Image (cartoon, rainbow, N blue to C red; front, side, top):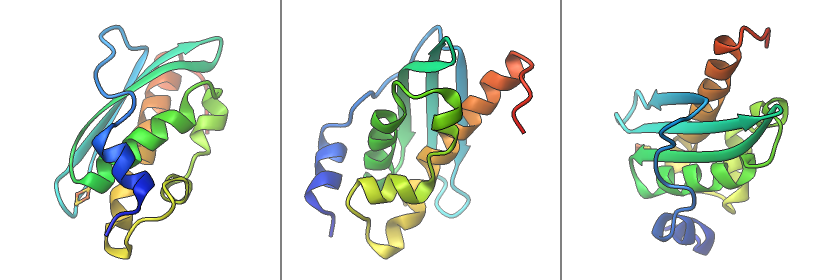
Length: 126
Ligand code: FES
C-alpha cells in the first residue's frame, strides 16, 4: 500500500520529539480522523535552524511529518511557509488516494508554527 520512501520515514522518522525552548509551536488536528500533529521550531536570523514534530496519527501522517521537517530545516520562514501539502506528498513519492488528507496535517502544523512565530514577534505576514 505504501511505497518504500513512505515506509522508511514511517519506520525511521526524522526529527521526532519536542524542542523544550522552542521559538514557536503549531498544532493541528484532522477533523476527519482526529489525529494530531505538533511542530516545534527554533529560528535564527529568519531561518529554521531546528524543527521537531510529534504526531499522533497513522503511518502516512508520521511519514509526512518526518518528510516535512527535512524539507523545512534550513529554509527561511518565508520559504517554509510556501511548502504545500501536495509537495509533502510528492516528496514522499505519492500516497494512496485515501491517505492524501493525512499529508495535510504536517504542512498545516508548520504553517501554524510560523504564524505563531510571526505573531509573537509582531511581524506582518499576510
Ligand atoms: Fe488520520 Fe491519516 S488517518 S492522519
